[in-house]
Length: 171
Image (cartoon, rainbow, N blue to C red; front, top):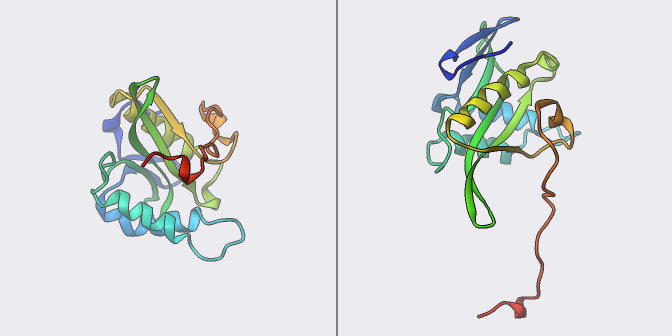
C-alpha cells in the first residue's frame, strides 16, 4: 500500500489492521510491545531499558520528539499493537555545517505479522514526515544490511571513538 500524505492517518490496512500516529496514552502498551519485541535473542523477559526509553519518548519531555512521532499498526478488533517505528529529529554537522537528520528507531513487528509490508508502509510515512521537517538525511541503526530493502546503506561504524590517557587532557 502506498500512502500519499500525512493527513491520511489513521488509515485502515488489509487484514483488519489500522495504521495511526501515537499519542501519550500509548506509552504503556507501546513500552510493553517494544520491551518484548526488542529483547535479545534467547532472553525470556522484556528489555526494560527499551520499554523505559519508549515511555520517555512519549512523555513529551524529549526536546526533538513529540508524543505522536511513532507510527503504530494495531489490530482494529482488539487495539493490540502489532508493529511500530518512530522518527527522532536531530541536527548533525559535517565540516561545521549543521543539517537535519531524521533518525528512525524502535522498528519492530510481532512475529505473526511479519512479511506483510507493514514496516515498508511505515517507512513511507516517516520519510514524508522527515522531508516535511526539512531533514536532508534519514538514518537508522540496527540489523546490518536489513534496511537496504528500504533504501538505506551502511555508512558509519558505530563502534568508532577516540581513546587517550587522562593525563593527556588539559586541566
